[in-house]
Length: 321
Ligand code: BTN
Image (cartoon, rainbow, N blue to C red; front, side, top):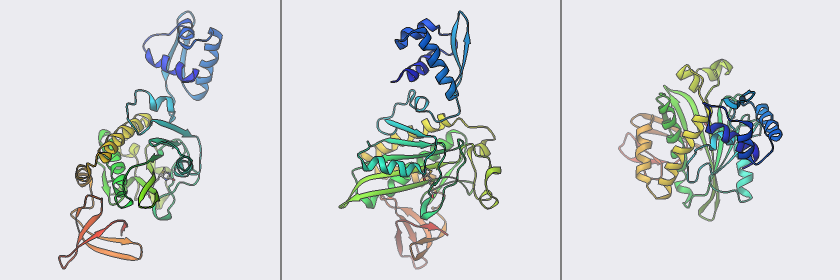
């Protein structure tokens, strides 16, 4: 842990009292002059620190930034978020994660960005978000499973996002296969990209985009009718750090279940959150269009569609039209 991280940790340990310069100096193993220098450094990141002569320093406010120190504080996950990287700006967190994964990056590494210049959605679409407002992240996973079961990864991510949203009082659901929706409007999306070797998954880049504090005013008139955000739903500014920490915890728990082969449990949760089941739907999958009653999911995450003639057809991926 570097000195600034240690300082942040020390300040967090006592926010209702002042920490004297001497106490901090001892804790950090530096001189009192160095303490002041490090206080200035963390202030420049956006931490509000009150300094009172003869009393010391007190943390007043943390910045609205996705800082690794804040995300990691007290985060007790076993895999997801073991390593956290935050970029002020990058093309896409999934591009960065891909590069890291290709050179051996560890499972559970999460890459966040405050701003993406080339955010990607499914089917070659763009993912638009506003600087410093939302959650944009990609997780490196190395599950021991066949590519046929990779939809389960999308499902655990989508279900985790729904759980987080419900903790904020937002009743979100999953629109098959990867949209998170609230009253029909999209609030988030999952982009699962897999790298395979023979018939095994080598690594997965799990990209998650969640509209948190972006106001609908910022969205184009076309998007505004179909999109929403947490701030719009709750009418309150949302703490992104708290949201991220909840998200990592839910994902970690569900990923553990997945690794233990608890596919039916995972599917049950997905069914609970599904906004697609029980409806007559039309799905475009490649050049084919499927139509039928969305009956249920199988244990690999494929959708079983019952057609008019009673036959059941499996649809592994696609888009509702
Ligand atoms: C979709 O709904 O089509 C999926 C959207 C996924 C967006 C996220 S934002 C973080 C990560 N980086 C990207 O470029 N895309 C994913």
